[in-house]
Amino acid sequence: MKQTCTAGAAGIFPKPTTRIQFLPPELLTIIFTYVHEDLQPMFDAVYSNLSASQRNSDPGGSQDLIKRSLLGQARLRLYEYSCSPICFPYSLANVCPTWRNVLSSTPAFWTNLIFFTDASEEPTSLKDAAHHLSYSRDLPINVTITKRDQSSMKDTTDEEEKASIQSFYQLLLPHIPRWHSVHIDADKSSSLPVFDITLKRDARILQAISLVCDEDDAVYEEDTVDRIFPKPEIASCWDISPTLKIVGLDGRNFNYLCISEAYAPWFALQNLLEQLTVSQFKSDHKLAGLAVSGAMRRIATLESLLSLKLVNLQLLADPHFDAPNVLIDMDHLEDITLVDLEPEVVKEIFRLCSFDSLRVVQLVRCEGLDDDFLAGIDDRLQLVSLDDLSSSFDLCAVVGNWRCASLSLSNCDCVDDAFIDFLTQSEEVAPPTDEGPAPADAPIIGGRRFACADLKILVLAFCSNVSIPMLKKMVEARSHYVDYSDPNWKMNTTYGPALMALIVKRSPSQPPVSEEDQKWFSERVPQTLWEF
Image 1 (tube, helix red, strand yellow):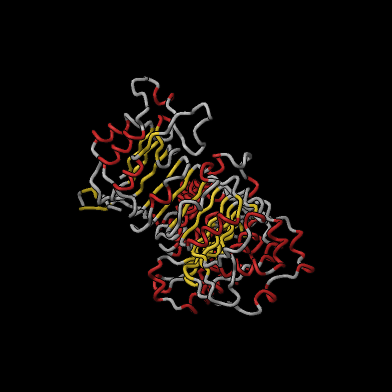
Image 2 (cartoon, rainbow, N blue to C red):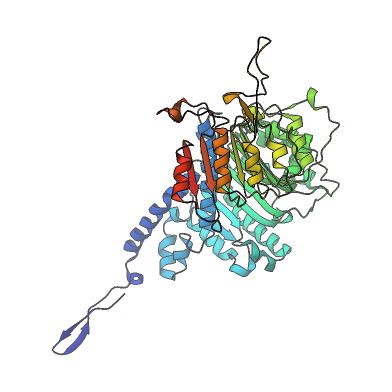
């Protein structure tokens, strides 16, 4: 604070000042409470929506998809904030012992616990973790054990990471009844605890648990299943009503759950679970021979599941499995995300399973696919999203016959002017004759058949190989039947192939789109959005 001075006959005397560290604890508590309340909406956006009892009253509606999307975005924002140097209350508690003492007297400040494991970035000591845990008193807690920065893990050995996570986990075990959500982020799968569902006996308010790793180091213990998992005849935890809404598992833990029949009752009882993520799994161990059919059959028993994400799983495909007679019922699933999966695994998933309610498919770095893996469901999909595809991916061959309403392409080198020109090309379709109408797979809106004939919404994110002139050509071609002279053309047009919405996100390296070009598109497409 600046000191202001006044001149007097006897000289210059400073006015008395009060520094913030000398404020009484009661006033500091009021100030800190205001800070906490300002941040509360960010926390509420996650934790108030984690309750499994707050499931949408109309499952399957578009609002259900939107809610899950917003919750996912809110969880990411909260995670990024929690790992930042300004995270409340930790940043303020580090100012001085007085502030730490004042903050520790309010349990509500300490319900979002963050423990860091990376050695080079001031990891959380076990002493500090115990103090922070005690500050929350008896309130429900949301716990994150993570690393501040992936690059910092190069200075942390596997054994150091494992020991750190195990120490924090053991510290938390006596507080299981207070667990509301738990997220553990490790570099190696061997550093993660084994997912022990017997914890459910006491974890009655637990809504979300996530065990995440960057790499499966394929450490499988021969006796893990018998030693850790309860036998069906003594599994008294089955009589506890499940409450989990979100589960994230590393591949090692998921494999244990699949090969242990003791867990079948637990899967069947998870009647409120909405989101499941399984990530990082190698199949180069004798205990790790998990087939696509086995994994999907186990997942299918989660009859309330709406959202499934599979990341970098080396599952075994069995092309001789007689899928037509034994389709795996995944009809309750609404959206599926597949990341870094081999093409044979992707094809096998859609070959073996029925997806009557599936509305969103997202594929990230899934190369080598053909055009028929979505056959039979593509016309029911609201959105297909393809991300991070290389220039060698034959996008035209894959999506040409798709009938989905929306297509999102992000960070795809294969999206260029040639592909946009492909969406421009069409062929005349003969009108219905006395012998019957045109084939059902030949849309004839406007008398021409386009690739992605039913496409109404196109999203292009960071696809730097697409030019504005080619986008204009595509819009003009697909809108050839739109009557722009009609004052109500936006309402009266039947969209698909004409676009109802065009969303373009451009990278900073791309030149900006002129106002004139933006105006041109807005006059021909009802909804346009340009993000730079």
